[in-house]
Image (cartoon, rainbow, N blue to C red; front, top):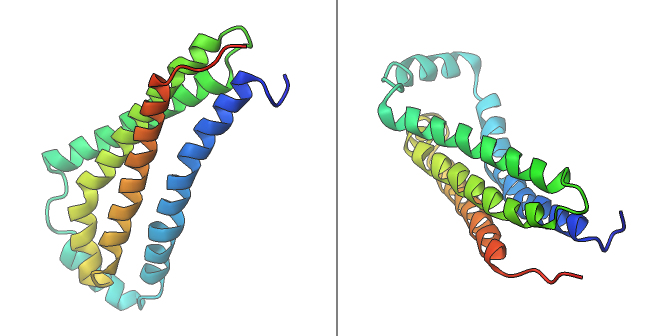
Length: 160
């Protein structure tokens, strides 16, 4: 398999389109939030945890968001599997994987956006209001990557 092969190009486009928003979510929202949580004194963290996790988090919207996240991960992994492990003669399979990756990204971003009010309520109590906007920006970038992959799936690819 050469670097100018259609399967390699498709795999690189898919991985790069999903890697950017994933890194943004990890580096821009999750790691600073985790660092701020770890800098809290232990007694303050325990007091915050007991005060804010007594509220019911097992609501229908949280379960729906978790289902969206699980379904989005499954669809994205299946799409990546189709892109990376398709044989050279299955160019149609590779082009059919872009809609899977796009839908998976959109499901992941919608699950993340659905969970923002719960993260916001917990974060504002312990850390202040600055982390909810970061999560929204990361979710929007993931939705944009999903839209890019869906648009890419409609554009005809040259054969040859």
